[in-house]
Image 1 (cartoon, rainbow, N blue to C red):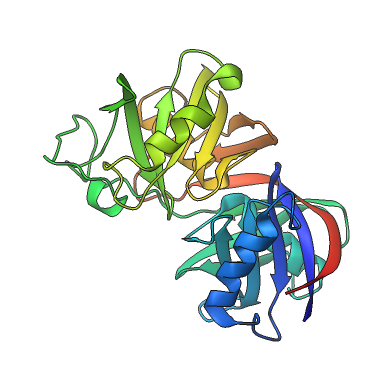
Image 2 (image 1 turned 90 degrees about the horizontal axis):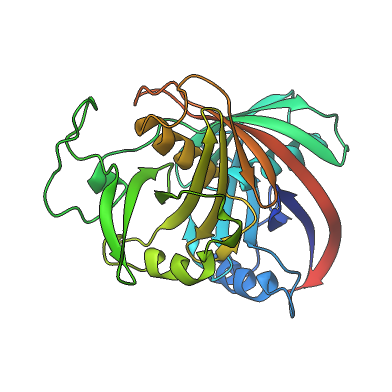
Length: 300
């Protein structure tokens, strides 16, 4: 069976997109998983960080079904959801420049802020919802609830928590943006940081019962961060939208950047702008580009 696809990326975080607004993906969930593994391969497939299937939404205008390159499901992808937004905007499925997309029950509000239908690049802003900071909800295996002085609403925030990886102690700040993240602040730009060596050790550490995404971040000033990311189920990617949000939240919690300001995060694939008030109940807002690379058909 030949299926149409669209290759898209947000800051180099690339996925293969399938329009299933009018029909189901062949083989159901198992077929989706197998396609993610096969097609994500950069040598024998189309190549990508995974696949994303666009469906009609039940609780939102559209639904995003995301699979990592290893076939595992992911709850949310910030770069992926911007690309979904671009796709439905370009195809005329939306009635305007504002609409909603759901992923595994979480509904996000999107707004097209620059670009017209069919443009190669479109800029969108996404209300990513409020960050999850409680240890058991991230989740992390925190043995003893830790009192964090000055942080309201929880005694179980994981802020600058020591974690030993490969005989070295790192201080991690953990945040969920619908998927778990461990943020590590380092003392220089991460260009030469051993992300590919340490990433799998963080991802599969017993401290993270559902594995974790890990961000290695250098704070240049109160409004600028440099970051590389290891994504669970995929490996290092050129960008991670939820990881960028988590990093800014972690930086604000540690008083490294200014709450309520647009923080520019430099990633391997481009820049994203993130804004959070610093109040746990408030949403994190992400702004960045989405681009179409090419379209085609492939036999499934």
